[in-house]
Amino acid sequence: MPAGRHFLQIPGPTNVPDRILRAIDRPTIDHRGPEFQRLGKEVLAGIQRVFQTRHPVVIYPASGTGAWEAALVNTLSAKDKVLMVETGHFATLWHKMAKKLGLDAEFIPGDWRHGVNPALVAERLAADKAHAIKAVCVVHNETSTGLMLPPGLSFNALSPRALEASKSAGLARSFWDWSEMLGPNASGFFPYTPATNLLYGLRESIAMLEEEGFANVFARHDRHAEATRRAVRAWGLELLCQEAAEYSSSLTAVMMPAGHDADRFRAVVLERFDMSLGQGLSKLSGKIFRIGHLGDFNDLMLAGTLAGVEMGLELASVPFRKGGVTAALEHLAAESRRGRGDRQAA
Ligand SMILES: Cc1ncc(COP(=O)(O)O)c(C=O)c1O
Image 1 (cartoon, rainbow, N blue to C red):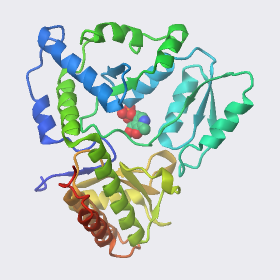
Image 2 (image 1 turned 120 degrees about the vertical axis):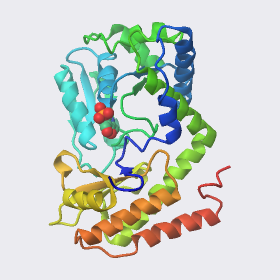
Image 3 (image 1 turned 180 degrees about the vertical axis):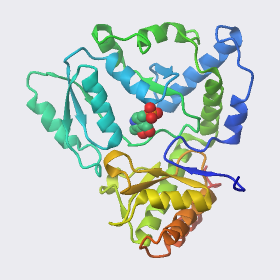
């Protein structure tokens, strides 16, 4: 066993804070009893604050793929036309799912290096004079959330229009049916066995996010993302994302120089430094690696992460320039001088 903590720098799941692990490590209770009801009400109200909505948020005991399916089957009917945009691996999987479900899913092609171009979507919608397109499905960020939980929960935030659409949607649904959820949820319960212990974790993670304050959480992620991009540029490597306005604050995908295998590099980092970096998926396999910098994460954890990448590049004989860690630290120090450091959030 390697000494010290494993660095789990995949872009979700994040490292799970001790506080959340301790919250999960409690006796499982009767999910039809009064104690659960209090928990259910708390997490259902808390998750609305996270999504910044007054409308219902459904919590599924499923990974994100389940929540995708739920979003489609609750709002659409067989052969409905939907517009999707190829932003990357997950958008591609969602498109595949839509077709499997019997939807007529149009896919606006993309190069996986850009987000959704709203002008293209607007153009396509304007051309749809007959209003055949029933839904536009976009992946906003090609990575998972920063709720700091072990995998196993996913969410649908329901707008009034989505709820209205669900009344006439014809796709077959049972487990995913919002209407089955919303009745019991109103009193804090679930229609089937919920992931009780993960909900303890969710309650704790919402508490942690609110103690820090959402604005501070976002600012912290912005700062770490910018420091990471500065490191990548100083190494002389290329970012996958080509549009500055579309940079993700939760992960940074880095192109491997031609002729070098990103997965071999990741294997070296894992072996030597006990750090997991995210792999490139499907057509980007071996071509990129991804640095997750989301969740319960601070300046020194980022410094350790980037140091592991820099040392790994050297050990794996990847051509690069030294100085990425220094560039990142300079940014963090400058931000700290401006009152935007880890412990300065107001
Ligand atoms: C943006 C996005 N959507 C969907 C998924 C699929 O979620 P899961 O693998 O949890 O089923 C992921 C997984 O990372 C994701 O990043």
